[in-house]
Length: 120
Image 1 (spheres, helix red, strand yellow):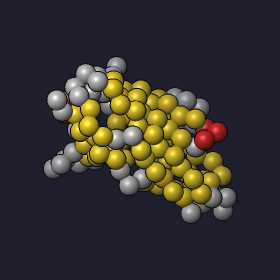
Image 2 (cartoon, one colour):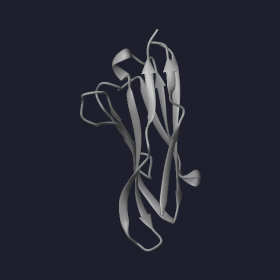
Image 3 (cartoon, one colour):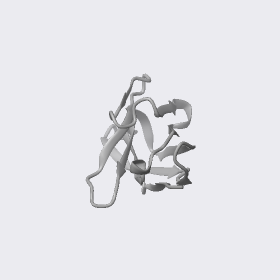
């Protein structure tokens, strides 16, 4: 019913920049919050940044001042601009969308993840 697809991951050097994109599609009536999570090997999945439909944002302390989340409501797309990434940012990044369907059901939908590797 809902597909969430991330793109933009890859290898980036420390101090460089990378932009992740996430598009939601399907039987979507509206999208509430969208967020980026990450999971490094041997660690639990953690919230990196989130943004409401109104544009309010929140960030993990570890990425404040370096990462910026934004969204295009018309395209059901959320972005994560990663500036000055560090090796500890290496992880699989997942997108989550809090969606209300045309059936009025509501739920969270995950993408398949995109690998981000920060290394020189």
